[in-house]
Image (cartoon, rainbow, N blue to C red; front, side):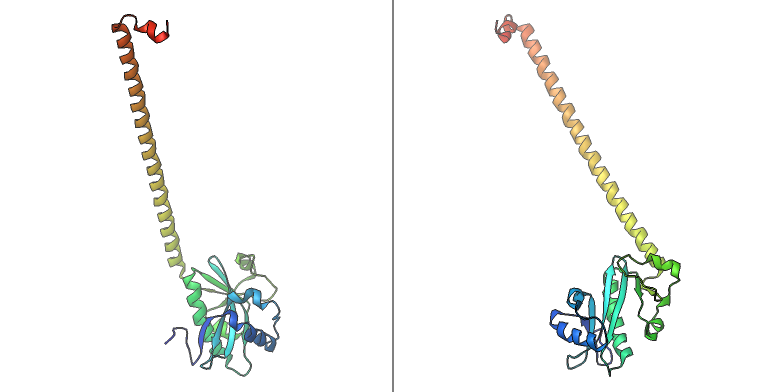
Length: 213
């Protein structure tokens, strides 16, 4: 079974072919549908066994943060069943892209029951600037345990430090090789000069010939 399938619904990413159906869904929910095509790749949808789209929600990812937005559910369907399938899908997508926190202003009780907690107004400033902020209350859900997140950061820092040290060692190795080559070249020039001087001393008239006299 599809891991994002729940209660007869399956969740997947929205495709270009879904645009007309999603625009109709947006109109049914009183949402602005005209510019939907520009943001289609942000949306996850639920479909029933017949392939009918029953719900959708947007997921905008910015680094380790994500915004859950613009929920739409087909009238007459169980909204929480659709939300459950979407939430399973959203968590998979978000975790696969390294998201640590999901923000939302969706106000359905389902989201609070699924781990989203109110965010105090001063902490709202931690949300990325691209998440259009309004006066509505914000909720957030942390996908990663803070200690695990800290451990992963420390691991990444350790890897970066090891790479830096390796690069520095490689640079020093190249410098040593260059120095040895320079010393050997200088020694060769010195030997050649000594040999030429020796030849000049040992061969009468050679200095005059070298000078063209």
